[in-house]
Length: 268
Image (cartoon, rainbow, N blue to C red; front, side):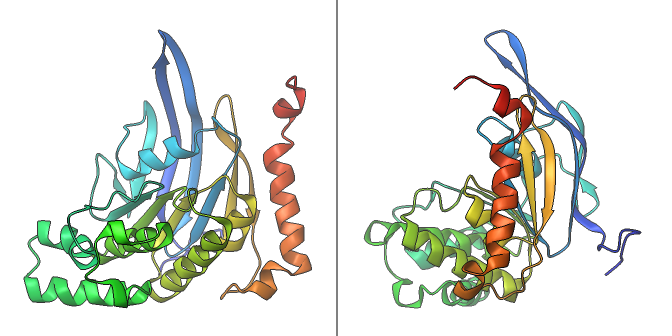
């Protein structure tokens, strides 16, 4: 793995002066403005910030779902020009096919790619086991809880062997206890599979618990306000979540997120 002059590995995801301007009622709205950010291979980066700061726009640009109006996004050193199987995308909505079982949902991308039936069944089995759905492999989505549906979505994203995982508020619709369990499930899978992850969230605790680094964005226009290094060891545990150092980092990210000068200046 090649290292840069900063000591980090070469970036797997690289935003280079990325700007995105949308037309809103005939007026230009700058969603993100000149963002540069490198995410090294196998790093887990979370992105937080106030509403309207461009978090989801940035992720959609990385996914190839939106073409930036300025700058460039590279994944694996190659420009992103559209969606690709090398970038697994997971949204808050589960987006499972309701008529397919868990196994068939996980196999779907492999089938589209022409992977032989025996190979895709084995890969699906591996990732279904990885997210703890072995006993539900033949169940339909309507019989699953919200957390189980999201685990199925994670298994499906992993199955096509993407270089990176792009996750936009994937646990936002879950209850608090299920959300914590899903965080642990995701970290367990990431620890074993070691993909590069960009994870957008509104939850500061979630951002700190998951990440190597937390990118805090500011709004109007969307830009990077601060990057917080998370020096907590993996695997993350309940003891780490309750530790003084976690509280310090959580408070640092919270303050950077919700006490930005322009927010403090706005009327209540």
